[in-house]
Image (tube, rainbow, N blue to C red; front, top):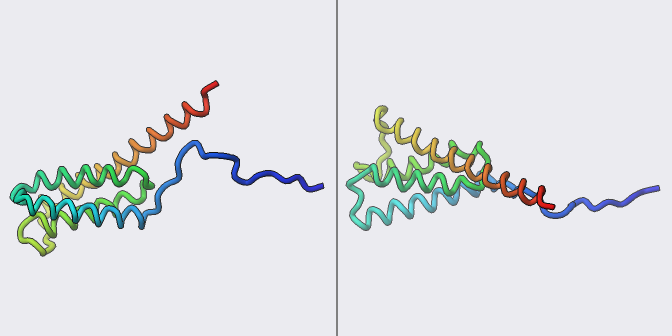
Length: 132
């Protein structure tokens, strides 16, 4: 005798991850838009402000992604920062002392954003499951 069981089983307690290419596309668009907005506001003289804004962007965009998407997210934010926010504009350059620190900061922001979102989702799922 065959017993039929539903495959879905209802709502998942923890949301699914976003696909890495979707996260990277969103990162590219948002990072370039923010750097453009900062440049139009004549705030492109301070790379620390651009780095802070792009670090926050990396953390927020990484919230729904897997941890394996963090290096790509950080790299795309660094390309936007290095190519369009730090002189000479429109040219990718590498200064080991500065750019390695900026890339590490962006990577740390993406990893922290991913981990905080995963912990938040796990805590919310635990509360949903353990309620009487």
